[in-house]
Length: 145
Image 1 (cartoon, rainbow, N blue to C red):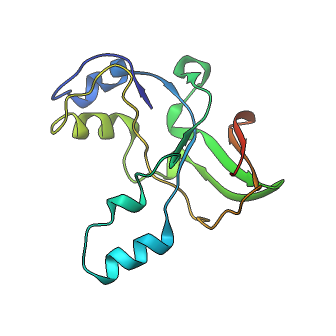
Image 2 (tube, rainbow, N blue to C red):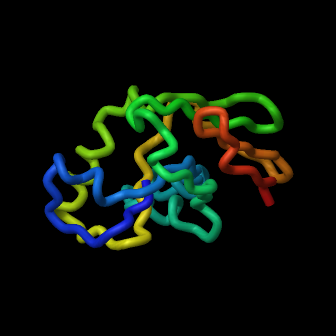
């Protein structure tokens, strides 16, 4: 979700006013570094925050969809679907997430909230071709470098 206005302690019933677009994104994890840090009992945020670790698709205005809580999405690698999901399967609804997060952080215009991922996380290789879809619309496409 893309935050479209400044907000703090947002009631759930007003949360829909604070985001204007959705897309799919990928937050990569450096698994080898993650295992080393975990083995040492250290925090492992370094394995999630490296250059190029977050890829974001083309934004689609939320008005383009009838129900944001019933959006289907999927990720293809080299033409094969490896992940698919539906926002209806999320543990928390979008407005719940906005309301909850805003209790701890001031949401600012342009902020982005990732909501988690469906099953199917796996490795990628150099030169893999990734395509992300929101409903039937391709919103993300790139080759791994």
